[in-house]
Image (cartoon, rainbow, N blue to C red; front, side):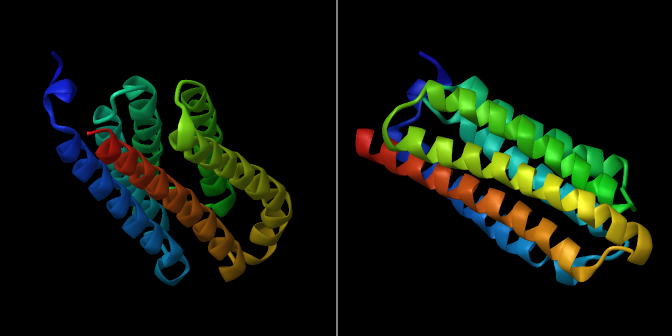
Length: 189
C-alpha cells in the first residue's frame, strides 16, 4: 500500500482544498503585479511561480490517479519560477516569452492529464488547459504589438497589467481545479 493510499480521503481532500486556496491567494498577488512592478518584477513573478508550482506538485502527489502528470504540471511551474529567479529578465518581451512557454507546456501536460481523468475533474482540467493555451495565444498576439511599444516607450502599465491578469487567471483556474479535485476526493471517501 502506497503512502497516498494510506492517507484518508478526508485528509487528502483537506490538503487539496488548502492547495487550491493557496494558489487562488497567489492569483490575487499576481493581479497586484502592476502595482508591484519595477526592478523586482521578475523576482516577484519567479517567487510566485515557485510557490504555486510547489503547491501544485504536492497537490499532484495527493491524487489517486494521474499523480505523475499532475505533479509534472507543478514541476514545470517550479522550473519557470527558477528561471525567473536565477535569470532576472529586465526586458518585458523576453519575460513574456518565458511565460508563454510555461503556459504552452503546462497546457499540453494538462491536456494529456485530462485524457486520463473523468467527470468534473476532466472538465476542470480541460478548462485549465484551454485557458493556459488561450492565454499563451493572447500573450503571443499581444507580444508582437507590445514588443514595438516596449522598444519605443518601455514597459507600459497596460502591458504589465495584461501579463499580470494572464498569470492571475491561470492561477485562479488551477486553484479552482484543485478545489474540484478536493471535492471529488471528499465525496469518494
